[in-house]
Image 1 (cartoon, rainbow, N blue to C red):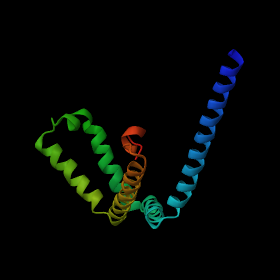
Image 2 (image 1 turned 120 degrees about the vertical axis):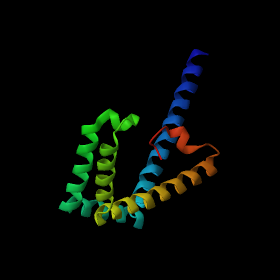
Image 3 (image 1 turned 180 degrees about the vertical axis):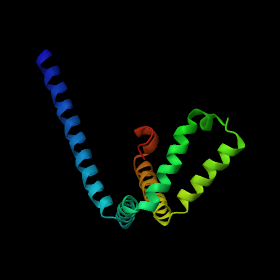
Image 4 (image 1 turned 90 degrees about the vertical axis):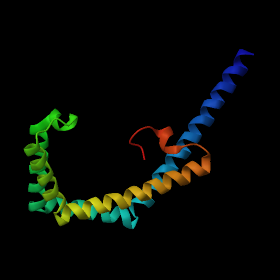
Length: 138
């Protein structure tokens, strides 16, 4: 009896491992298809251009440095009017950069693709896929 239970348990583990491997293979195939999508390619190209755009990089650095300088005050809403205006001005200058706008737009379009895929998976398996994967998954 003990040998039979061990054999059944081992077989269950083999089946589970096989299912896991099939799921991983399907995920790899999906990732390859997603990487060839126009949205993904556009996002990669926008990111490349953003990294190479000196003015955009300077605007991003200026905004991030001001955010760091103001630290927790900005997070909890304790900024004075002058600091808030300066932070808003720097954020506007950053977002006005064409490379930043293009990258943000490409990210938004890719996020829509990912949301659509997540909804399709959710519908197909009857489980909220994004919630099951945890924060930041989809």
